[in-house]
Amino acid sequence: MTETTTATDSNRATTDWAVDYDADPIAIRDPVAEALGVLDPGDPFVVTYEDAVKAAGHSCPTAAGAYRIVQTGLDALYPDDHPVRSDIEVRVAGPRDDATYGVMGRIVSYVTGAAEDDGFGGLAGGYGGRRDLLTFDAFEPDSPDPTFRFRRTDTDETVEVSYHVRDVPDGGPAVGHLQRILDGSASEEQRSAFAEAWHRRVRVVLTRDALFTVEQID
Image 1 (cartoon, rainbow, N blue to C red):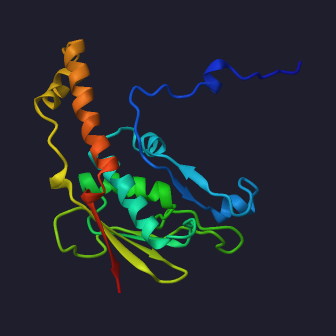
Image 2: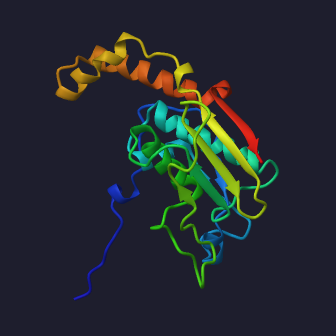
């Protein structure tokens, strides 16, 4: 007897987002995907903030900040071309087990492909490899702001991006409803007020360029 498998509605379902974000996508080439025929040569993957949210499992000013950090760094390194996975080294100012740098590092790694010693080793002797391109606690930043360095391994050009977290607006009293949401005691009005305040802060991070500084590193 031959079993026939058909696609179900759940297989075809797409996420029905409860909130809309207005963030430019990140286009990035992947030489391995091109070599294996996943992408046509020269065509990029397009990574959105919603994709980063899926990778992180949540949306918050930290996740949004990580997305903007990597976007800002890649724009500076590749002003006229698509960035290329396996050609991007990432150096992180803080440790991997830090609550901020850990979350940010995962999103930056997701976008760039840069990984620690457990990363993809590449095809046929290392083609497109991303192993050992991500290092935590790699340098001492000039400020307490979350800071990352991005280096093009093909040109050695390096930029440093800092995220001025202290300048992100406060969420106000509605953010205090989170505990009630977690324990199930929040009213619909409280849930709605929390969501509005929370995602207003996220949108600020995604759209306010002044929260980020980028500089060339010699």
